[in-house]
Every structure is written in structure tokens, then in C-alpha cells.
Amino acid sequence: MIVSDRLLIRLSPHGAAEVAAAGFHCRRLGRATIAWMGDDAAAGHGEEIEILDTFAAETASPAPQIFNRIAWRDDTLSIASDPLNLKPLYVARDGEEVFFASRLLDLVKLRPALARPLDREALLALLVFGHVLDEQTLHQRIRRLPADSATTWSAAAGLQTRLRHGLISNLPDVTGALARSLLTDIDAIISERLRALPMSPGQRPVIALSGGFDSRILAARACAMNIPLHAYTYGRWRDRDAVIARWIARRLRLDHQLLPYPDDVLRRHRVHFLDVTEGQDDPSLLQIANLLSLPHPQGTVLLHGYGGGSLLGDNVSNWMHDDAQSRPALLAAIVRKAGIPAAKASALAASLGVADDALPRRVSAAAEAEAYPYHHQALMAWDLKNRQRRFIGEHFGLLGHRFKVRAPFYDARLMKLCMALPAGLLEERLLNRLYLKQFFPRLAQIPHDQEATPVLPDVKDELLMALIDKLLRPTNIWRHTLGHDDREAQRLMTESVAAFSSIMREIWDEAVDLPAAAASDQRVRKRIWGFVDYSRRLAKLI
Image (cartoon, rainbow, N blue to C red; front, side, top):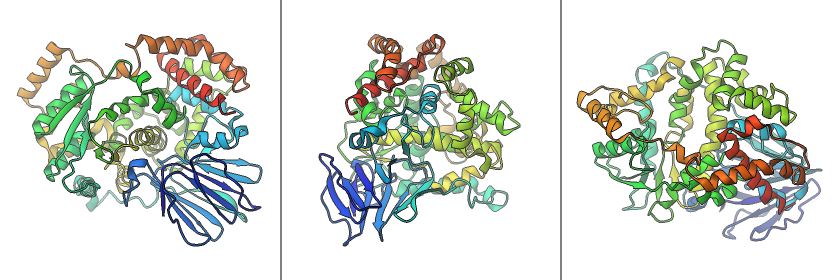
């Protein structure tokens, strides 16, 4: 089996054709041409080939958490992936030929004509939500394989992609015995994932520790299992997130260090934004790149709480308190809560020539809203298959070339279990609270960094937190991520907003003027900056 983090596949009903891509190894097999970066290893027998598409640090790992498994056998290509297809794989058609690539711009290099036309709905989603939706890219002719999908291609049947409906099929019954053991079952899944960490003898995993619930649950369970951890938090010592994380680490007796969080984080890691997210996401994803300063070697296991908040109900509370009684009301609530103010979104839609109801329609499709019997399930599916998929997948991409990243909450069984739960258990982080109260009551006495009171009130701890809030006046780490304190970043955002119309005309061959009201929004300005940078890189390839 070939293990690679970068591949290109060209499929033609008329037989294998050349793939001219510098640095790639190449094999022709019947109607397929498969190119990859990495070792030129044996990949199969005769007209068969198997490839594991994962991240660079995982090339020696027998069971990476994020992957695409690709096989060419009997003149048929088949692709199977992790539950949400977190490892990007892009597909494009050109005439009768079909192309796959793990990097979007590799497709553009191979066939520059695929770059245009612009997908205006995708650009609207990027500016409103901070990411394109599900299978969208900014290019109409290039799609990403959708979340929770499997794909095949053959000359006879062509390209076929089916949704597995893994988040809704065969859900466990939580009305009987399982309900009584719910927290124990969740704990068993987390513990199993921790036992499977791919550690070499004597290796000490590191954990990204925040002031929230997800990472403290992982840290506490790992400590209880005698897994030695070194904890890191990025930020400033006065950030409330760092204050709470330090408190958690002391209670768990963890070695804990604070990683620097520079004012220029958006500019410092810009190359990662363009190389990994390829312009399809908000530059704020770059905050995770602060973990690249970890003083640990290639292949170190990095433990992260990705997905925990989404699975255990953080966003159910955020979006469901509107009391949406119908699917249209739920979709409108998602657009309103996850995006920018409605008036600005409407102005952007008008400037792009996109219908006002385009985003709710796309949200409905991206969430498969009609497939779920309950509103909160559709909401969780949207969050997992769109926001979480984009953010977690890109975070894995940013860190995965150096670290073996593991996210115990990202588990198909845990996703199914949480999808089956009633909304009441998922609101206001209730499941997190119940778990901490049952298994780690001492940690339940420390508040979430975004909350004023702890799960289990303790007079001494509450007085200490009140004193910290009064004397330190803790700051918010996200201010740095938005670039508020980086004058050069603000200048570049202003420059990008001014250049937007000419970029649209000269690179995308589109006539679009940016509405002033939307351009004044800091989030939109930041996303335009990313879009303009991506467009300029694209221009060098087409």
C-alpha cells in the first residue's frame, strides 16, 4: 500500500493518459493514471493499486484517524473515508475525463480551465459563514467529496457518489438501559481512544489544553489512566482561557506551559492558510497554527478536543433557543447565528447576484435537513458536516505534517450516540456538566472559560475566580485572532477590500462591487483579505 498526503488521479474511459506533475510518482493502470508524492513503493499487484491518503506525520501509523482509502481494482476506482471525510479530496470533470486530487490547486495546475467560473454562492457562504458549504469550492467545476460519503468510478457506470447517512442510520435506543449507562458509555469510548494513542515506548503525548470542557475531560481521563501528558495553552497570561487552563493543569498536576500568541498571528502563518485551506475558509483558522511552536519532534502525539463541543451540545444551545418550530425557521436561525447580520448578508447576496433565499436553501441541502426527524438533529448534522468538518479538517491539515493529531471525540459511535439523544440533554453543555460531576467532580468546580459559575459551586473556588476577574481583568484571546491589534493586518484588509472589484474582474472575469455596509464588518474584511490573497495565487496558475 502507498501512503501519501498528496495525490492526483486521472480517469479516462479511453485509457490511461499522462499526468504531468513535478515531484509526483506515476503509474498507469488500464483507464487510470495515479500520481502521488512520497516513497515509490509497491502498491499492489498487476493492475491493482491501493493508496492511503492521510497527513504527512501519519505515514508510519497503521491506523490514522483521518484518511481516504483509495483502491483501483477490476477497472473500478473506490474511495472510502473517515466518518466525515475530513481529509479533503477534490473532484472535477473535463469532458469524459474525471480528476481527483488532495490539493485543489493541483487540479488547477493540471487543467487551468477548471478554475473558472466562480461559484458565487460559495463566495457568499465564505463571506457570511467563514467557509464554503459541504461539497462547494469557489470554483463551479471543482467539488469536494461531500461529508459522510463514498465514491466509485468505472467506465461503464461513470462517477457515483453516495451519502452513507452514517449520522442517522442505526441510531442506538437511548430510552432503556443505555440511558442509565449513558455517561459510562461515553467514558468508555473516550478511554478506548486514549488507549489506542500511537505512542512509541517512553513517548509523552502533548495536549492542547483550553479553559473549556472538552480538553479538560480528555486530560482528566488520560491522567486517570496514567497516561503522562505535557499540557500547552496558547495565549497571554491574562487571557481568561489561559487562566482557567492553568487552574485545570494545577488540579491535575500536569506540566503546563503557555505558548506565545503574537499580535501578528494572521500574517505570521499566512503561508499555511494558503497552502492548507487553499482560500476556502476564514483566516481565523490560523490561530491553531500557534501549536506549531510546540518544542516537540516530528511525529509527537498531539491530543485535542476537536468535535467535543459540537457532539456534546454546545451549539444546540446557541442556535435552538429561538424555539424554532419548523424547518424553515431552524434554517433561518442557523444562517442568523452562524453568519453575519442579516442586512449585511442580504447586501452581499444582492451584490453577487445571488437570491436572498440561496443560503437557507444551501444550508438545508448541506444539513440534509429533511433526513432528520428532530430539529436538533438537523442542527447537529449541519454543524458536524459543515462548520466542524471545515475547521477540524483544516486544523488537522495545519498540524498533521508535524504531529500525529488525535481527537478522541471524533468517533463514529460517539457521534451516533449523541445524535440519538433528546435535545434537553444537549443544551447548555448539560452532558459535559453531568460527565464532570460523575467522574471528575473536582474539575467541575472550575468554571468554563466562557461562563461565570462552575458546574459544582465551591465557595473557595468561586471567591478565587471573582478575585481573578476583579484584579486581572482577563482578556479575550479571540481579539488577537480577529487581527484587531495588528495595524499591518488592518492595512492589508483595507487594501484587499479596495482591490476586491478589480480582482473579481481581472482574475475571475466577474463584475461585482462590494457593498459598503458589508465591507465595514471586521469578519467580512478578514475573509475578503483571504479571498484576495487566494485569487492572486490562483492568477499565477491560469
